Length: 429
Ligand code: NIG
Ligand code: FE
Image 1: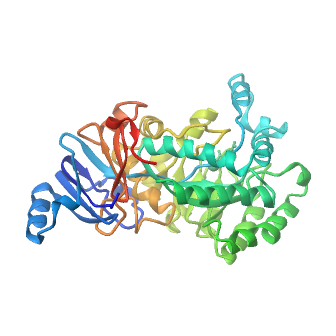
Image 2 (image 1 turned 30 degrees about the vertical axis):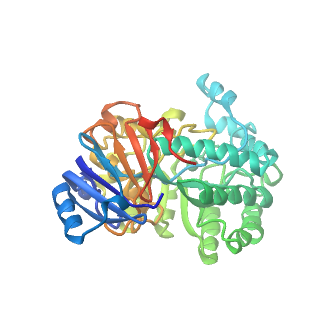
């Protein structure tokens, strides 16, 4: 585990090269090197090129090849590790019962109004011990890793009170330290209105600003602040108040915007220069135009629309409006209980008019940008982390083509092979 690795003879080295979000036509340019190779030294990408070029450079520099692990990727495609920039993977309990109600016709918001939904998971998360949350978190991260995810964002938001929000964030930070996957922590204290604040939403926002956010920042527990800006949850004005204060305290900001109802969340994201606005199923043309102008990444979550039987976000229109699009799973126990990257590819390409090339960019360089990390991950460029996946097929085109099936064979994190399907899964832990 020294982070020194050479991958050579790749049929396609899909670099996704770039250090910023890709917009419009740029999203189709994957910068593929045929018969490609990549060298990782001490966890960082040291060289990228054709196998011939890389072998010549290694020979010239007199590098000791015995210091490197070597992977022969003949007949395989090699890509940057996937980045999943929107998940709620730390929670107690499950909501399988609610899923069956939804299959019988109840809507997500109706269940929420009846006191189910997010607040149901809040109860179970308040009752869960930190260790229970941690153990469940490890299993979920292991599964994500097997799909080629090397960085994930994880939100709090199932506490809605100081102690539980902090407990969730502590677990997320702990997991970041012990698991191969890097985790970007997000504070989502304003995820729903808890029972004791019903009808007093403004007071709840004040409570978050005054009592909870300062602690989260002081203890360095989260990088982002997020809010569920939605009809019957938090209004645009309440979201603006929360996020403006969050920014002043030192958080970066993102928001759940225009998911069920067109409320002006996309416009708010542009006004506040948020890093990303997420969901956007109902976002207005003008909101999208403003987001493109303000360089806000549109993080689309097709598996949520699929699970809720809602219309998909307008992927084609958003890309054609020159707005950078990222894709994410939205893994959570309610609206979208899946960490499946193949499902995201299938839905984005077959139902959102997003091309395979755009979907690859949306799950690598653009999802890195949705976490403000396009300078360090999301592409195979010299200086970035050696986070790499090897597919079992010769081309990235197999990812959506092999519908709903995991095509990832190997996962490399910081230059170390950490998952290998051929060796039965996760290699060390
Ligand atoms: O992104 N929409 C709000 N939050 C989550 C759902 C969380 C839940 O249902 O537990 C989402 O879809
Ligand atoms: Fe979400």
